[in-house]
Length: 458
Image: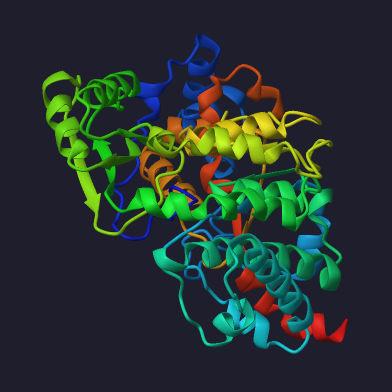
């Protein structure tokens, strides 16, 4: 699960997202009229209008672009097409996971890509050694394909930052596609810090200094922490009740529990010390308005984005360390959607404030997904080794939308309407989620390897 410093959700399977659009939105009369009219049988509309074509041919989700590979919505896109879209791209950065290599070894072994990749790995290793005092050889780790674990958490952080920045540099150097020309960025957990580095707010040393300085204490806190995913069926989770329950459990004085990420209306990640997750689940059975279930993960995760980190004063220590960062005095370009606020909140002097909150505030992944879709983004570049939680969230949303629109002409009409500028201003804002099937996804490490021959020829 991309939690704490970004651990990704691949250790257990999430249930499909609970998104019942008719129940989440109440359409104003004009929208109901549009949906009803577009959804009328073609014969009725044609008879009224005196025309003989079937208007429904325009009301569908274009599946011709959905050329799937390993990721359900990943597509193949040539260099010229991607370059033409450079100013409209969104970049999504992954965070820490139990597996962090992905296809890094293939990128490192490629003769054209190796100089860039090796330089980033050596630079990150030097930072890691300076801060932790331990010998670090990330190039050798990648060459030998040795995965990181909790005992090498600091190296995992350095590896992720290095490979994500290397992928962005490869895209610019060999294909002339600059992230800073894009539309927006966002990152889950550690990925948000890498996005700040990629967008020019921080250099690599600044990006690594605080996470690495506090890595040992984060690992220390992980030893008695359990990660779980809380789900509800039929109705959305009551965040207010869950937070109230966490406060009740914490007040008992036998461990701390809190949300780590809001994944969807019916799912959130929780992290708790000792048996606090069990006690919270018991409390929710009596107090939550709908039925909930809790699934635990057996692996250990540093409990960032939760109040557990207060135990070692990690938020305030991080804030103190950030006083002396050399960067953080310019607005990111492109804008970054913060998982702290769920919106584009960074400007030229609030990076330290937001990253202070980033340490112990839950990740608002669902709000960021909505912001991406409502902004009209059509292509998302997923950066980092084997990204998981962000593409998986979009995939589940896509599947949910398609399942609900498949047998409903009216819902298909609304899916098409959200792409029409003249209708967007009158539709309820959350209908932007219906755009999910229209968004194309590219996993950058796959794309770079697919087009490696073109890079060699450049």
